[in-house]
Length: 639
Image (cartoon, rainbow, N blue to C red; front, side, top):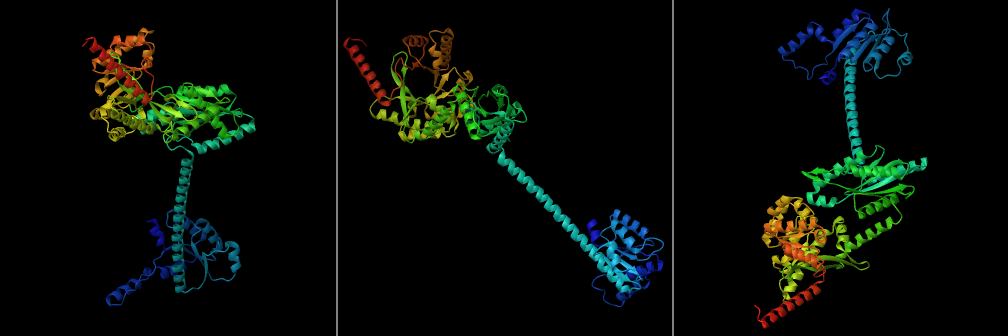
């Protein structure tokens, strides 16, 4: 509404010390003041004369006899939001200000008002106007006596000019505001883009880009002040297992919790960055030596020690920490990170959940690990994996009709690499599922090949990792392997750890039910080292329990282990489950297990893991021995 009022503003201020002049302006600019103006319009309507297409401009006048009074009126009008568009000002108004001084005060009060100077004298030169008022496009001079049309033209043109200027000014202000808003929006967007480019999207921590910058700054500061600082590389232990078992949303929540704890474990001047899935880097401010950095590293390990509850499951998190120092261990950012990383892997090799400071030679082991990982990626295509088979023997009869498939990597340079070396590496670099699928297909193919050779049906157990169990297409992979080989599903057995089964019981139950419906046998491996819960033994369709070799190892020397083994066997039998003991190496262990009622065993006492060909030979020797025993019994008349 204010803008509409300004757009139609015809408010005019007349400042003249002659009251008659006031009347003249009123008659010219406000025709309704005259008596015949209204009559003229009525006569035109009565006698049919056409009305003009548009009405003449409408003006509102206020009057002042002295300049100071006029300025007061202008100030009040502007304050009320109804400023004057035009002022007619007499040049001489004794005893007060003259016209030029009045204009000077008026423009201080309202710099937008248009001014017409009315003068009957010639003693003011145009240069006087320039000198006292400066060059202005808001000033006209009207010489007295003036014609009404001159006054009307000035009023119409200058009020319209004032109105147009207000419109333009509002448009400019609107554009300036729009530009300002958009500029602020662009600046905010640029700030957001800079933040995205330099910070981790999940945790909000600095990413590798910002970490590199912080390292450069730390090096410059250390050089200038001849100080030392430390770089810590942290890797969460067994995070991949948690991520694969509970899902990526749970893994993301865990990483956010870890990030919060890390920020709370260091000072504000230190940098905490996330540079990988579960890898963090800390750049500590100036340290006086190794003990300072070690104290911080121990504080970080302690900060992560208390469990984190995710989806109702309390998770115990640990971390392996590697430390490198500037300038003692390296002076370049990449070298500092590489040496801290090498120390971190050394901490993992020394049992995890500990810290190691970089020492000469650690980077060599890291390079070897990177080389081994690179070779592992090519091992499948180069057919470097081999499956060995260890018989599962009947404890009572010493017969065997089943075996466990055990994977080996025959490295072309390093020779045979055991699974405890390359399986964790395969899990870390995402190869475990591809390797597991190959083992399943190869075992099914080999079982069918033995049957085609006329050998007795052999059931072979395959170890399935927690990652493979949770990948979502395990059932499809197993079905495809069985169908491709044309194998009876009952010839395949899957061995799962307690942890893999119990991480998500509802999902596990659904998968195990489908496996059981297919006819696949399911065993729980390393029983007694995980959850060992009777509830899941009742709920899940499980066929066998395997006693961990750790209990069998000390079976003859520790009464507690013997009691545990006896309890496991009794529990399994009460639930109609078969029991298999792993790691049986001596006759004494076998006799003890036999007396306890253990169903099967495997271990070096009977046979180490052997190749498929050697297992065939072993099977044939057992068959020949059985035939020989049968013939002997017949000759001596035994049933």
